[in-house]
Length: 335
Picture 1: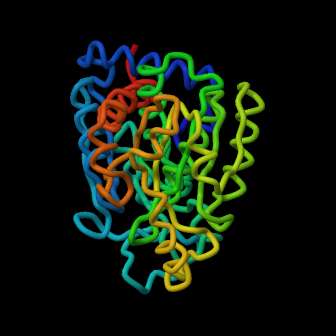
Picture 2 (picture 1 turned 180 degrees about the horizontal axis):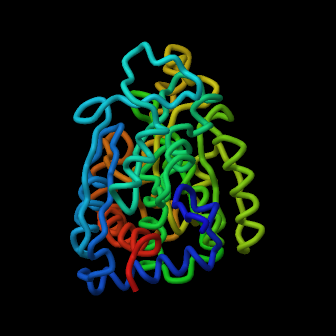
């Protein structure tokens, strides 16, 4: 029997995504259930978390399941992922054993593992979660690596709640300043889900260096073609914001400068004006604003934007709970 994982939404059809969103909406209306009764879930956090950990733990509990949280290298042994490695360093056990042992204990494994920010050619291989999927004999869920598919579903659900049919709605994914380089995961995922929902997507960023990995740009173009939307890149703030129905903000590191912060920093510092503010939002079509959180106020977006009725970031954050329950129930649920 083939195991179904939830590692990227590109592995799921539009119909399957719609079904997950429908189930998530049902869980939002009626949060409690027994779909995970008797089921156990291992949540492995290689990086910090607030919303992800809380929503997965609570989601399992509300559906009758039990979640076990592990932080490899802190409260669990450091794990080796390289094949054929001579383990004479800090790692104590290999993923080949970890994934197979956990599979004997639990019904589902979820993993959060950010890139190392040293070499994108290495990071883009997404070795950690792919290794879990390779060796595990139970479903594996991505809690954020180089994409963030659970955030995608929460975002899409929030947009549908406020806008209804998303086809051909103008969607702006805008880069914003942040004092340090960040993972491209949420940006990659926003691009994937917005194009999969048939929206007219504009990727707004300061220079071509901030355009996302061609893998995701290609997926975005394919999604747009299949679902009636479009995808383009812009470096013109006013043109991008004009008439937008949705503005989604995220900071991310420029791929050519991964591991070279001293070279990227001057470019980043010169583009602080990409902050989402009232003047830019006034150019939109009474547009919604959102962000995955956490957000540095008055760095990525102003207080006025965050506190406005147009901001649906809290709705999106709440929806993490509901969509993750839908994902877990779809993979290991009863009935």
